[in-house]
Length: 200
Image (cartoon, rainbow, N blue to C red):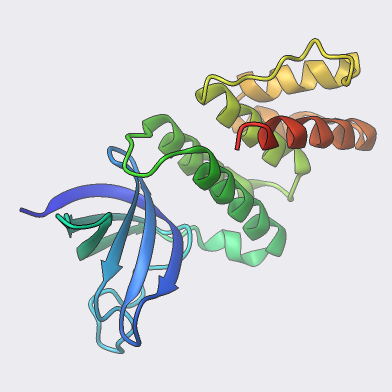
């Protein structure tokens, strides 16, 4: 029996001359991979419905022999087309996806991560590209994982500590209104780079 869920396309790659492998982050099932048979054919029913960061409702047949399932039907809900107007937005979205892939296991329910990524992708094109958006995403991921960093370290100045605390607490519009200095951005980037790397 086919299963139904809602998911965001994380990654796509060719499988054969006519088919694709599509990696998803879903609300109920976490990260899963499906085969879209015939998706590269001109008259495929999947045509125009599968691309990076697309939000879709879809059905699939679960494989009994592997973690690669068969995609059945796709209903496109949101393309996040505004992301494609600025390369920086795409780069930030790709960074978020990479972080999720590196810190989560496949086929494990990840509802908080799903909500986080949905909100992040919606927020990105609502203001000019800002480095703090990615830093806030990293802080929120660490908190969901139960790995919130120790901010009492001497590696951070008082101002950077306060901003990192706010990154975890505030919603996306509030994060975009913060005004960290260039020095603070660099300091926080270095701190989170080390922290995130230690959890991979």
